[in-house]
Structure formats: structure tokens, C-alpha cells
Image 1 (cartoon, rainbow, N blue to C red):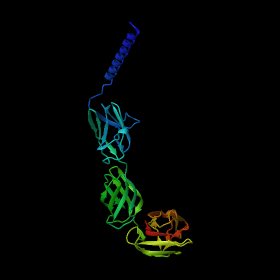
Image 2: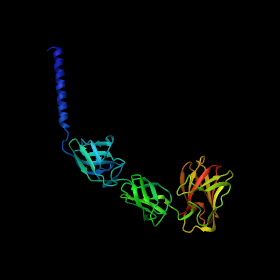
Image 3: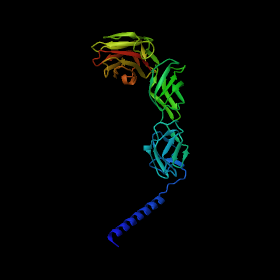
Image 4: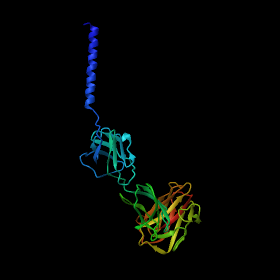
Length: 342
């Protein structure tokens, strides 16, 4: 046999061997065409202990059988991203989306090339989160907007422990009516996952100024100009105080005669809108006869609702004067509203 013929035969022999190997590999890796089943959910660390519930946005391992061709995971109508889905025959590892349809009950459906399977399972949204509410005070039946997150499925809102009528709600906002029997107190939101209470309280137990000075309080401001009936920039209601300091540490000051007893009150509240040039400037609060002071940092072009614990300004038992003094060379105008105690 010549050399050329020998090489040709050897080449064909190699090709035949490769084809046999490929055929053998295909037989070993034949796809499982049986429809999938789902048996439970675990975390990624301990895959032997089934979970009863998980939270939005978590990584999970879905356990079952016949899952090697899984290409879609549906959480109660919301699909997991393809890039966050990995699987083998017994497990699908996937990241739950950050928002789902229901606050608690979100069944999982896994779809493979050969069928689908569904597992009823609790995937819970986080507890509700309150970031702010507006306005900071109000009368019975006034509408208040609560802003935050995870309000889906809200079951109740209370102000001062009294149920407020829910007008509307979304994932991030709830509108309620102030209860008829109370106009101040803690703001709490309840969903199927839990209850949260806002850091700040709503309303005023004792009003110094809303649309006018109340009770025994009078205006004794100095080194400043003011308008007690300003109507353009108002936090709530009809009027605010437009107050302009003059250079030399002028002050907005209120006096109570007779003296005001702080019994039953823990917090001084005030809303201030900073005019042009006020960003980062200071207004220093002092109470007479208390000795401590407290600095407020102003925001330009927006209202800020301040709540100052009385313990931070000397814990006085009685008050003659409340002084809001310019303390950083501020010669611009500020606007004041909703002053009082809680």
C-alpha cells in the first residue's frame, strides 16, 4: 500500500471515531423531557432547609425536578430577569424582583421546554416606610399625604391612635383625612407585613402661630421687619409670617404673658421657608428662662418642618420668650408658619 492511500484511510478512521464519540456524548446528555415539579424554596447557603417565606429582591433556590431546561420564572405575574436565572435538573437559582403584585402571596411558576409548575409561596414586601407627610399639621377632615414606600395592601392609617380615612394609596403614597376627633399625634401605617410610625408627629397640641398668634402669645421681634399676614409663601392655611432680619443678630421673638407652662409638652415645632441666600444659614433658638440654645440649618426655596425636643433647649418648666435669632450674617427673608408645642 502506498503512503498516500494509507494516510487517507487513517483520516477516515479518525473521523469515524470522532463521530462515534459525539454520538455517545449525545446519548449521555439526552434532555429530560418530563414536565417540571416544584417542591420548595431555600436560600443559597443552606439548600437542605425549606423556607416558609422570603422578601422582595432576595436570591433564592427553587427546588424540584426536571428543571434543567427552565427558561422563565414568574412571580405572580412579574418575571425574573433572564440574566438572574441559573438552573440544573433539581434547582433553579434566581433573584426575586424588587417589586411584586401582592404584599405577601406571590406564587412562583417555573416554565421549562416541557411544561410549567407552580408553587404557592409567601414572598413578602418589606415593612412600610414613612419618609414624610404633608402638611405637618391640620384640622379634622383636612387631607394629608404620606410619602414613603411599601404601602401596597395598606390596611390602616392612624393619627394619634385614631383611624384616619384612606382616600387613596399607591406603592409610595397614601392620602388620608385627619380624624374628626383628634388633630395631632403619631402617624402610623399598617400593611399585611407590619406597622411603622413616622419619626415626626402630626399637628400641634398648643398653637403659637398658624394663621395668627394664638392665646397669650404676642410678637416682640427686634432688629427685623415682618409681615404677620403674608399670603404668597404659606405652609398651610391663609397666612404666614414674612420675617427679614437686619444685620446685627435680629430675632423673631414671641412672648407669653402670663408665662407658658410646658407641662404635658415635649417638643417645640416650627416650619420655616428660606428665601434667597439662606441655604446653610443658621437660626438659633433659645427659650427664656432656659439657658441652652439650638441651631436650625435653613433650606433655600423650600419649607422645612423642624421638631426640637425641649430637653435639647434646657427643659424649661415655664417659658416667657421664644427667640429665633439670626446667627450667621443672614440679611435675607424667611417665612414662618405652624409654630407651637407637641
